[in-house]
Image (cartoon, rainbow, N blue to C red; front, top):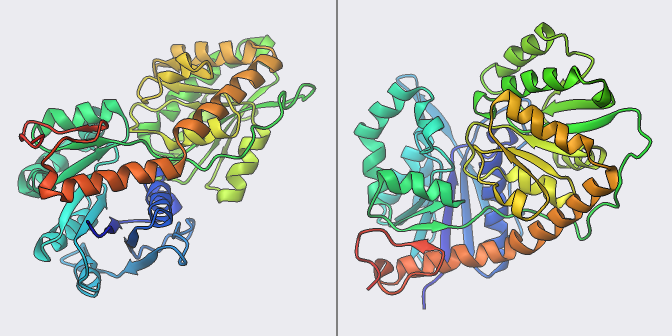
Length: 401
């Protein structure tokens, strides 16, 4: 029987790192509850405006590894952390992300210690991501990233579109399609939320980063603002700033004369996030690209209908009758938002209840953890020979036995 010993590594476990940090922490805890021995190592970043999302120490051995500078580049102490682990059982190191010096350090350290690796790119092989600062990625791909991905015994995608993007570049490796999970309230909030409110809120929550297409959302809101029938609606954008993008958004809001209709706020903690969901009536994610978009699942879990762009893998919002899936251009975003706002509050409430039920049944962490552990087991059994689980694309390597 395989000893379930897994090492999860991530360069940054702060709220500023967005969805990957939350997913890594919650997956570690969920796998530990399923009986696995889990260690989590993360880079010891110091972000004054961000909190660390460390797992419960009663469940997971979590450590921050030091980061020092060499020739101006960060050097992560993953090697020493792995070396200090007790040598018991067959381990898998599951690294979160690619391109970063932290990802390079984690996967190369695993190779030095003879530990097999699984890699979750977290959307970093999507077309938009590859086109963002492309020359750096072309160099990194040739120098090390293609080799490290090719050496992994398995890869992990959170949705089918991400699986296809990974497969286009890596035809041989097994790829498991396992979504991120979400902590779901036991019951959906009672609809409608604000039947007599003067101001009704559409919420966008996420990193303030160019991939989120927030300038396009601001233009879309300008289209909505021209309709007097929608005067009661207000857009609230909240999230940690990435590389000064907040200033770009503030300038766009001011230039459009929408300061009275759009609030631009900062990062929030978990309690603050729940409060934001509780006072909103709709959620919007206009991203150019998302491998999953965990905040969509969180909004649905809190009973909010969602307008998500086609850059996200949330087409089922339409078939599950709990939202809209629209093109990311401003006109399409505005049309989706206007349709959602025009619905009677009772209908939006019914959509929210359906979304809550869907997330509760399809994206609970216990089931996600069991699938990931099953994947690890299959990969470790003679390096994945034998029939794969039904959520695994085995690739062209002949590992189906």
